Amino acid sequence: GRILVIHGPNLNLLGTREPEVYGSTTLAEIDAMLHELGQELGIEVESFQSNHEGAIIDAIHGARGRCDGILINPGAFTHYALAIRDAISAVGLPVVEVHLSNIHSREPFRHRSVIAPVAVGTIAGFGSDSYLLGLRALANRIRSQR
Ligand code: DQA
Image (cartoon, rainbow, N blue to C red; front, side, top):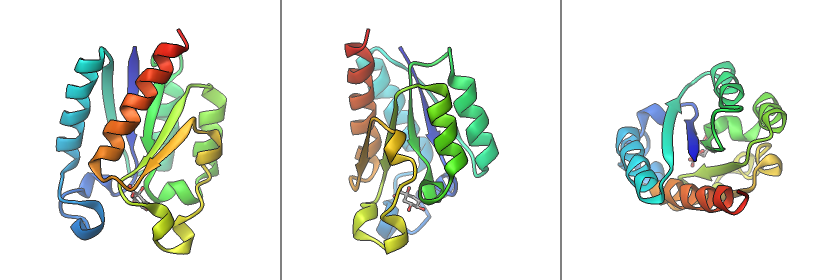
């Protein structure tokens, strides 16, 4: 199996970006942990970060027929990017949404996700563990559907 990990806007700054909210682990460290867990699970992990909605949409389209699922932290696009939601619906791949922070305990504008209705499920609030838990959940899902 192959999983595409997509990190949305501002996540390239992880490590120095509001560490009290997002932790001090860098994106490179998260990617390294995901690759390591992928090896354990027998899954190829490919990761991608962009600050641009269109580039994220292109990456979702590009996963069609090539990847078995997508793990995504859409960053602030979570809350309003209907074109990302539509891209997920269009490709029909299983998607797991993850967030470092607990979006439900923060500002009201973060409580709504336009991605959640088209995701298999969402994991939020566990820092970098959200990604690792999400990868496990997606790998199990892909395996059980074979
Ligand atoms: C985030 C939560 C979003 O509300 C925020 O805009 C982010 C990061 C998270 O991982 O906690 O950029 O997706």
